[in-house]
Image (cartoon, rainbow, N blue to C red):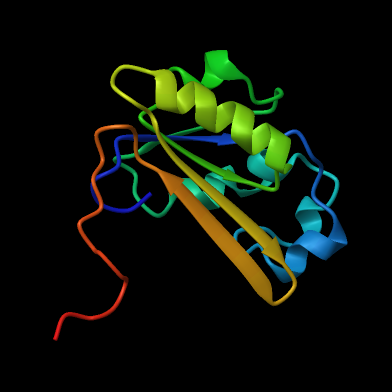
Length: 128
């Protein structure tokens, strides 16, 4: 939500729990029970008033994704991620897709920036 972003849509259908407070920096105890996106939107808007930040509390689907150039998906199942990624990949131009999954101290990130994105790094090592 800092420099270079025109708009952000926070999509979440879940209510904020006490457990969420340990990993969410933009909410506090008074927000418990509210929709998670709704609970943090005001504080996120403060980061950059030039960025339009809106909340969507309905289920994520292709019609919502279609209006965006990048989708960052977290707290979703692998099946949901595959479905949304396939839709993003088929769009012209492709919608960039990032899927982040966290499980305790372990995490993973998958990025699909479309069929025209080329990786030139042959082995992931620093150049010599």
